[in-house]
Amino acid sequence: MENRLLFGTAYYPEYMPYERTDQDIAMMKAAGMNTVRIAESTWSTLEPAEGIFDFSYIDRVLEKTEKAGMLVIVGTPTYAVPAWLVRKDPDIMAETSEGREKYGHRQIFDLLNPTFRKHAEIVIRKLAAHTAGHKNVTGFQIDNETKHYDNMGRRMQAGFRQYLKEKFVTTERLNEAFGLAYWSNSNLVLECQAQAFKYWTPYPGQLRLHAYSHLASGAGGCCTGTGIPYTADTRRTGRGF
Image 1: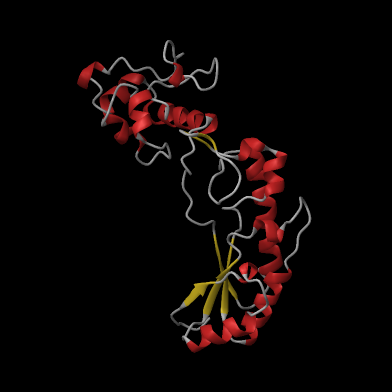
Image 2: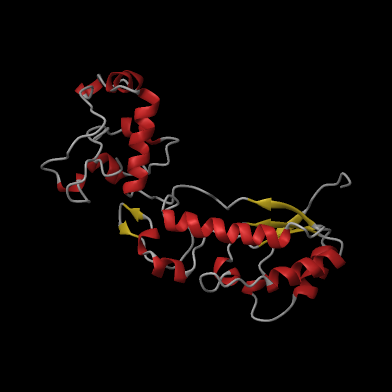
């Protein structure tokens, strides 16, 4: 491909109440654009029911942009989940400090949920296979604004505990790394049963990590870069751990 600056916009024709792709492309070209990004939030459009795929709007955009001499970046559609998937497994919705998320807007699901991961891989593979051969597809965007989505559910906590065990091996090393002699927190253990404090046991009988349960500022250092949300609720109750 020739060396040139790619200048374009995110394009969502599926949101429009009427067909105006030709007009939109003409406006983009008039603005000097040569690239569009599509598809990154359209899972329910591309797979309206489990195993039923419809790439017709993708094909229409690819055809019209190719005729206009424009390139296309195809985004994976999985940062907004379809209703049928949540009905299949309600546990897909993230559990935050406010409780289980309710279906509606984007970015409110558990990235670690195995049902989500299975179906996300299916639709991504289908979309990639359908579009990769088009000569004006210049690349793929892998997800969009990926983060923890305030998830503090059991899979996130189990992953955090495993991360601590693999990184520090012993509680002594963990205590030393985070200076837990401060305020007598160096008796920290990697896994124990919470007792007496109901906020530490949202899952009855679950073994939970007490890490930083009494720290205010220290918890922020533990959370940074781990994907564990750090909030006022975390400081007060230790629920993020």
